[in-house]
Length: 220
Ligand code: DX5
Ligand code: ZN
Image (tube, rainbow, N blue to C red):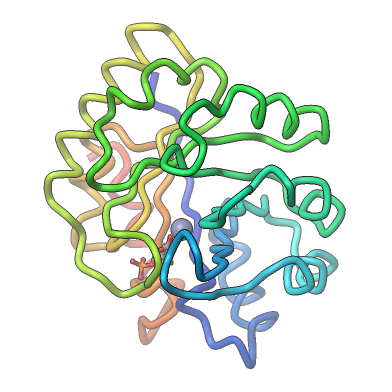
């Protein structure tokens, strides 16, 4: 069953020189904070890491949703947990069988999720729906913010929603990349529970208004 909508702004689009203030501004209006962790191997870019998460932790009560676009993600779970992560999501493309990683995350008290890239079929994630608190469908190729939403993701969301509901699983469906007020309704209608939104929030003239617009799509 689809859960109440949660919005997870992605700090990748924020002004890193004012990161704490940017988060504080949106915090009352959102649910999770999406933190893109990159290593320059799995994706051709480098973003924030463990010390930044540790600095932000005392300044925010949001769920820290750490999207790990890195090789050997499970090696970092312990340090991420200590720094303040609440949830880690790892790519099936680096961990084709995430069963052990899911166990390791849970033992540390982390929520666990799997992510699939635009070119990876939903069928690849199907065997692991039960061990995932969240399944993330990338709606852009990972590595950079500000890209356009890949429309074919809508059919993948619908397909995943059916699988999750058929098995009566509580698994959240999260959609990441190019999401904003213009397409939030379609993404939620297709079955998403959690919207990641970077540029459409932090690059908007009024981030709070953009969030409210996305929230208003629920029930439409
Ligand atoms: C892309 C990241 C996304 C990105 C989303 O690799 O995983 O979380 O920050 O940014 P927008 O919303 O700008 O596409
Ligand atoms: Zn992300």
